[in-house]
Length: 111
Length: 114
Image (cartoon, rainbow over all chains, first blue to last red; front, side):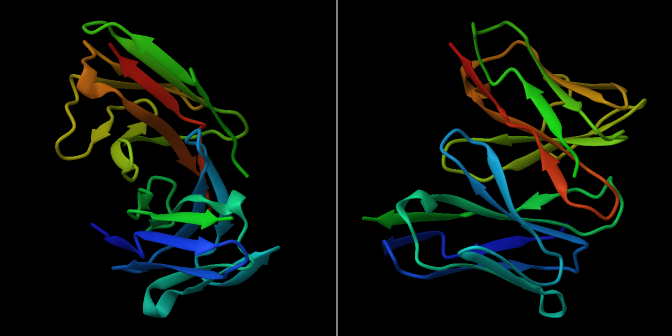
């Protein structure tokens, strides 16, 4: 099956810094999403981005499907950005195509 | 996009009892739903694929007799943890996905077996 790797596994930054999180995947994908998991476990969908670039406020994401990677950028980090960020992919178009998660990046923003 | 409702949000049960978790698709007829399990400080691991009107498909290493999945309608899938033990304590989350679209996830169920 498809493999999803995220890096770095842990990232500690000062408030105001910028960060880049990476997601590599081993096969072509039809679906790629970035999530932030809040302290209660809920997955907050940040981007649905199987290809191209999107921006939402301080966050942006780029997926280069031909090179099988995606990047999540967080600018001017705030303490509320702390938490675990997951990349998740599905290789197929069908609704039955499994969504596979990467191992996550744990981000800690220090005041 | 699709909206998924999952409950209960948390449950505490005694060892040896069974617990049922429900996952409802609120605005989409989901022929397929997925169930994940997450242990502390780990990622979400796919447990099984729930198929409406037929048997679920389980991932390698997941006991199908312990984790019973029922998908009797296009809007409801249930996961029953049978004869729960403390090692089954975990965070369980369901999801659905429309063809070619993004996945929608329930808010999760935190199970504690004492």
